Length: 320
Ligand SMILES: NC(=O)c1ccc[n+]([C@@H]2O[C@H](COP(=O)([O-])OP(=O)(O)OC[C@H]3O[C@@H](n4cnc5c(N)ncnc54)[C@H](OP(=O)(O)O)[C@@H]3O)[C@@H](O)[C@H]2O)c1
Image 1 (cartoon, rainbow, N blue to C red):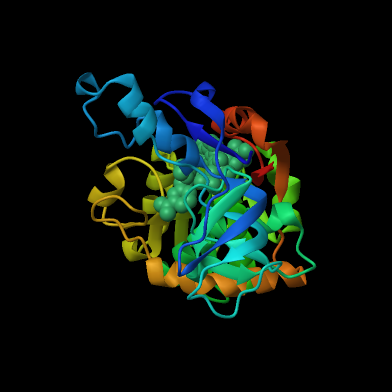
Image 2: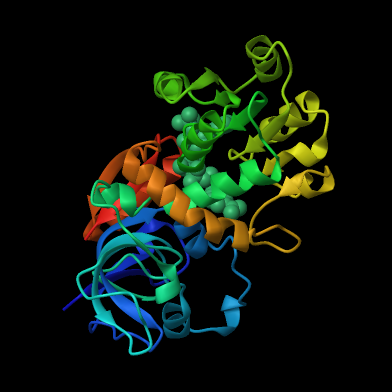
């Protein structure tokens, strides 16, 4: 029987359970994809951590909670195995990148046809399955902050999944990129065209030294008070600072807050439109997807423990 990994309660990664389920069927406007690689993203563990939890559990029994837990796995790549009756231009056997999707920690997933992009043959499965969520987020952040050639952009969390995408996209656009990261990730960031600086006390001074002509824009993928404070100190125009994570202080400070919470800019159209370009760049080798580690589907909990530790450079990927 095909497998799916789902949380069966709110909590830590040990709530992830491998369940056997029937092979799903395609909706009229959708497809079934045999998953070859599913990208792991922080949203996956946030969904069952309780962070977004607004249900009063005192009034729900354990079976209700188990049945109502969110599915996880918002991106993947794989092979089309069934095509809905209303879908045109997609064939069984097509190799595709799938985003967005809602339950990709599985052997098979259903997706609307609008979520499919053809996978270039040159792009590996792990890379194809973990490219789009971070790539579209990075693209959105650089777009709303208006980063252009000749400018200097500060990227907080430059060695994370989103950060590595933003570093490469900004460098390709002709910007000078200063990226914060732990020391052990500095060589990788240099390779990708950025000037790395260590985060931590004294960050503003280190950035000033690396950017003697000033910083035009900042994108925060770390979500720390330090990232927000240093961005506010160094970037004169607050509309050129964007953050994708962190405390409510971000909204109060007048910067751009990107995401899916109340009052945040989800950038649905910008992100959807960026998918094809990201796949093209990755297929041609112009954009590298850095995969830190792969795990079998049955070790999803282990992948989440590594992710929660917070310092993997690049992507963690499940291979069913
Ligand atoms: N709003 C949205 O649309 C959206 C979309 C995607 C992701 N997100 C959120 O954005 C965040 C980053 O996502 P991700 O996929 O890039 O996560 P990730 O791959 O886990 O990367 C996070 C990176 O943060 C760095 N970091 C840890 N502590 C730091 C510190 N004190 N200062 C600066 N950097 C630090 C780590 O790099 P080092 O190893 O160098 O320490 C790590 O690689 C997550 O909270 C995620 O949920 C939001």
